Length: 256
Image (cartoon, rainbow, N blue to C red; front, side, top):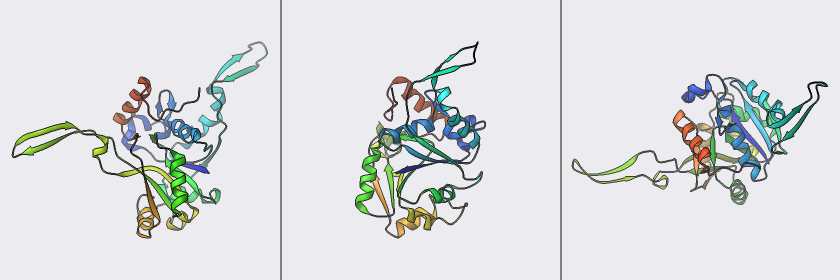
């Protein structure tokens, strides 16, 4: 199955980083978060990617065009100009980079990939990581036979929980992630019938398409109780960076 990754948004809530590069190229542990996401899928056996580009998409193209030289140890002969490389990690991926427009919305970007997606496919955003079992999500999707599967996750708990009795606080505890409600985790499986629910470039996937799929009984949810974290803000980025540097990154499946 192909994996479609939405990489074209402006990432305005992370403008400290995205003024000069697209959000998927913001680095965690010295590598773009996009590479972390792709490696998640690659570790589950999914190695063919469709990247829907938009804002500063040329930087993503440059990254993959120069991926091997930049990820390898190099030996340069100054006399002959010969360059020999020794890659650190082999990734047998096929990566197709498709310009889907500067101002296209999330649904519209998927619609522009329709010519390349004639079979069931995976889809996600270019800014979130998880330890979700992608193969289990696909198995769940195949079992129920509907048009769409959304991975449901619980957002990270950020604030302590209070219980009042009048003005007195009678209980305080740090909230757990499992205290939060379910939200869209951004790891999808779609049948090509999804495209019938998307009108044009201005269609937001999270609006009418998913709402109509739900109303038609065609949207199923795979509940994931494990780790999930998006990178919307600088705080999110710093959280992911700290996890990576401390060796406590639950999504970490980096090749040796």
